Length: 181
Image 1 (cartoon, rainbow, N blue to C red):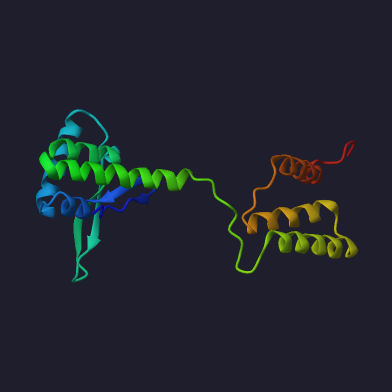
Image 2 (cartoon, rainbow, N blue to C red; image 1 turned 180 degrees about the horizontal axis):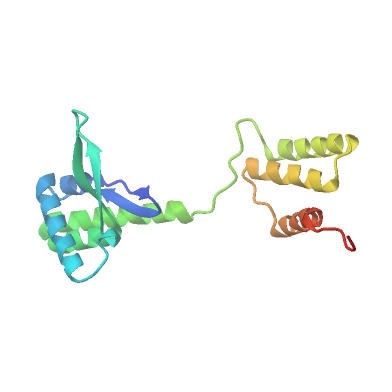
């Protein structure tokens, strides 16, 4: 029923005008005409069109570019306010749900995504072994710290702020010219 798919377009969450046209049971060209009229009104009011509608194109079945719009939540609000009756209610419910699902997905806490076969304990084991080998080979504690930071980041684990600050402090020692020279 909710055939609307929210996608990210340069940091803005949008829905394709073709999906909106299908949802509100309008011809896509008729919806494009309405959106262009809304865009003209926005321009007259010196309101940024891009906050509502983003001009775009898609490739049709013959690989020919065709116009469409990427519609933000504000744009969906505007279209819903102009659509009455059952179609308007169903469209409003669908787009509000789709945007809310996207918001929840973007703000949900993420657990680290480890590469296949890697567990937390195996990552820790790797870091211990790599630390030992690096020290045996004459690596500095700073180099070992960099390896640990890169390993944590690669495995998707957050690097503690205090660890980053200490590592940055160590690295800045190499950038500071010796005193008295």
